[in-house]
Image: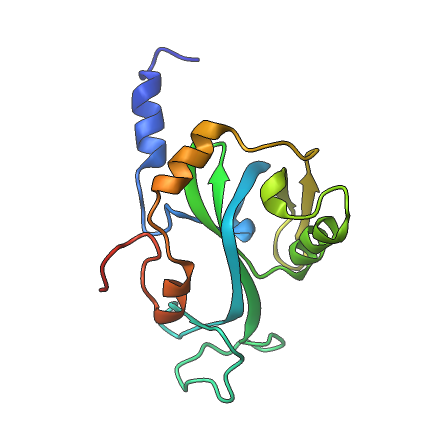
Length: 177
């Protein structure tokens, strides 16, 4: 490692929260990312407003609000899966939200495999190659192994309520906006 900046400072800056600091979006990955699932996941439907803000529903809405962004050739409503994950790169817990069907199908394949099962029992590596319509995603599971006790202890101290996503609130906050 370079002596240009102290390692502790680099880690501190890397972990500082930006508006998306506690979220992992597979579409924005720049390198393979190793994750461990914790807690229980949620699913629902998501659409983006003209102001570029997400709206999420637990059940498929009968009608979308008028301010939902419309793009030719694309459906504005997507199915999503969200979960708390430990991100080994940032050494932090984040929310992984998957809307990519390829990633969901790969995860479900491991979940149905009796050697893997529950995704909280193994790490996964997610990567992205390409851009736009040429984007390809991959998800590969590591062999199952128990979670490290220190990671479980950190998760047990974490305050996170994924259902707050449906109310456009921060899942890591203990108060409402």
